[in-house]
Length: 315
Image 1 (cartoon, rainbow, N blue to C red):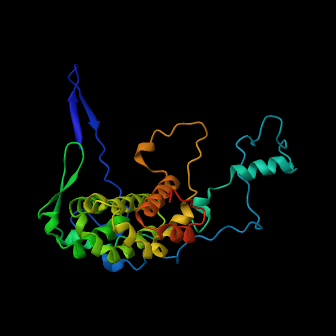
Image 2 (image 1 turned 45 degrees about the vertical axis):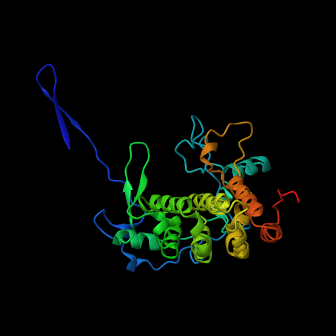
Image 3 (image 1 turned 180 degrees about the vertical axis):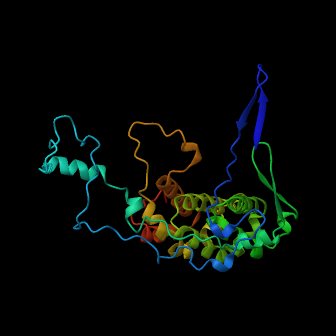
């Protein structure tokens, strides 16, 4: 729309305000008045069908262009057809060119590349249909969920797996609803979580298999909250950590892939440390929590799947 202001001379000065719509991550989401077109989604979340192959080290690769390699004064061919001689690089210059054109492993190695994450979660389907007893309370500082039913009265076998399935969502408002819904249910109904553990494994495994860094960080924080949620209730070490031990084979393989993904800052300061976004450090903290609350069999099972892990429990 246009705003018209009158200057001191009486002339009209027109200021055009540009309004840009927020970019949608998925075409299936549609507009704010549509429901997600789940019928078009055929890909499987966390599938290995569409992943880039590691480049062949023996293949001939093109060098990164040198910005200083341009035609300078008295360096042309003077209008003749004599071709310009090809530059001859030394081994040191070729090595330097290769270092400049090198891409991080997170983009080139198939094990680190993100997998498909289609918007077909159960939480999205239930939320768009209005079957969840929640609504978003838009506060002045931060949003929260307003529950229409007391959380303790909810059927955790039905609702908790739905919220866990939405942890791999990256599009608002579904991502916020899933994460906040899980945290609210773990806080208010910690004594009802233990029987539901077997139903939570597949959603957790699917979210980790996407290998999307933001999704993995979110799931790791939820895992730490899940392991610690019944400690205060039971008064001891808690039973949820022990109930997760048989399912380490589904949860820990992806953690073993990213456990060394730390930020090498040298002597710099990580001012965003409070946000807990360092993937390698977060994985180490999660494994420590799993060992401390998993009982006597936790360490040997973690060590079997994450060989570089070192115990933090003193027996």
